[in-house]
Picture 1 (cartoon, rainbow, N blue to C red):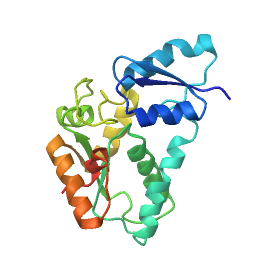
Picture 2: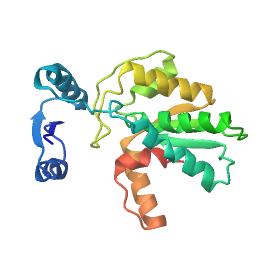
Picture 3: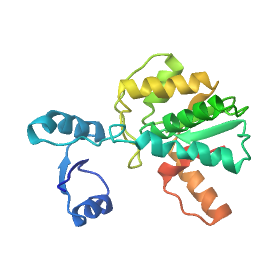
Picture 4: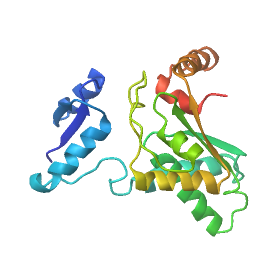
Length: 205
């Protein structure tokens, strides 16, 4: 099956090679990941493409929600008081919130009493800004780390993210590049795990 992938020109070379080696047609573009998504949106009808960008893939939310079930199972069906999750495209939190809603409907107590925190890099934190200002926004800005440098999820996704944060009594936080790098060192020293800085948004105290 033919695949066409659009990436910003400054995407790490390893990501580009991986897609090329598995047979995809890779197009590198000026701008951010949202510019790539917009290009797909402009061309998909004429080209006959099926768009599988974030939150447009069949069953992605169903896959992401398994994190919620795994958390509940591993905590003996009593979730911790707070779950902090890296924002990314928003699908993880939306999926987990869906899982908690389903578990509540079948009678499990305390599932949705858990507060949710969303973490974003301070250089690009549209969800944090929208949460704090109680309005949706779009801010294109810079961040030192790949895969964090995105102006944010589309508005309909952000409604779902912010609704889940508010319904759970949670919050959204931003952390600096320095904090991200410090957390990488801390986790490496304490756990023997080398995490990319983009993974630290959920790990800071």
